[in-house]
Length: 119
Image (cartoon, rainbow, N blue to C red; front, side):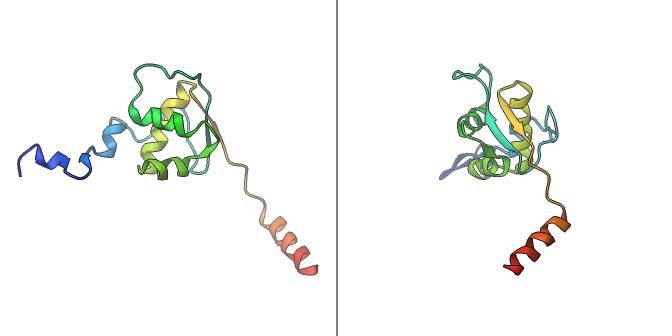
């Protein structure tokens, strides 16, 4: 196998390792982003010059509130990579990242179950 053949799949095209999309970074630039955080595009209609194609796809997919895990699934990329890419966009104020609401207390859930059983 030649050097060029190992980076090309005839059906899929060029193969780029996911870590190259983040330039080897594993931590988001702005803040810790939860798996179920909601991402929404906040920039204008024209994205700034210099963004990678994956950044542009994220901006396009998040014009409506979208969970981080859904973005990763749609892009078919590891969640860690998408966290870093979304962190880049958040740092540039191109997306808003809304944290998920806190989980309800277990006692509240048990009271709801008891109330439903009483019906």
